[in-house]
Length: 388
Ligand SMILES: C[S@@+](CC[C@H](N)C(=O)[O-])C[C@H]1O[C@@H](n2cnc3c(N)ncnc32)[C@H](O)[C@@H]1O
Image (tube, rainbow, N blue to C red):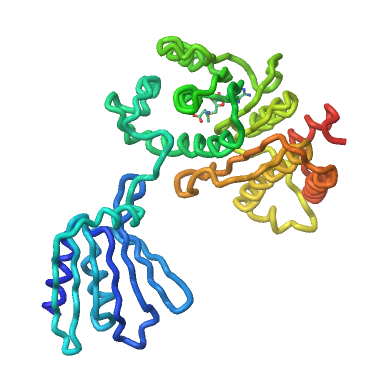
């Protein structure tokens, strides 16, 4: 036991990227093989353990300092071999039938293991070290291009948003685009997208950010001017009733509260915008309307009613978009552990059969009837005869 502990301790003291525990000797144990991978999330490293049974793989995450104990627990009396790889050393630990422990250690270049063991940071489009000057002014990056700690979640959200836009943009050879960002607020996303289109994709864009807050609009216009982002402008105004007379290719919203998202989607539909990317939040409207005698269990518990109402809101929005000719998806925007506001509506104008449009609309009407709902986007589209 002491021999085994000391060998395992020697391995655990290296920064091992991957460990493979094999050669099972305990027939009672349900796991046939166990792998450990060094991973990183939010700048925190940990080990992910994969435990293989005959038919399944089970996962467990542990802190780095628990590696030695965990390894000992799994190996002792159960397995006869451990292979471990740090970036430049490979360990081979073997246990003989009589319980004698042998630890081999040799220098080796394990770069490939490092790449395979998902411990690298996600390959974001917006990388740390890129100097996007407005983002330094807005407090997302330091002058050296490092993400400010308190802004890390925002940075991840923006990257994910850009990633989802990038997926869509790649499908066509766009030369120029007009983009409206509704409820742009401090406009981190707006500045990043401008940079992404102009500097990375080399697409001519005209971008407008709209918000109700005078001070943020002034600040954003000052920053855009300072960095000569000539085609990026910010306007003071309400999404509801906003008029724009030229063509609009893309509408985006990030956390436009409650029905502000509906007005943004409605504007996009009216303008026949090619693409829509919208992360809603604070979906309160239906929570105040929802009622059902038959399905009263849904409304019996406040917390369930609130969550179901919020989810219904976005399903209804997605279906209404389909009903007016948009191919629509609801995507996970960000891990729910980071933000509960984690659905992104991605819609692109497409040929959708009348049958499918009708089906989508009927699904909306069914749920409206069942739960006594009257959503804003439905009312707006009905008023303008987009849906009949
Ligand atoms: C939660 S903030 C999000 C800001 C920004 N998009 C972001 O994600 O960092 C919501 C913004 O929407 C703006 N907003 C809400 N309702 C609006 C409306 N009807 N018209 C224009 N802006 C609105 C608010 O002023 C606020 O700045």
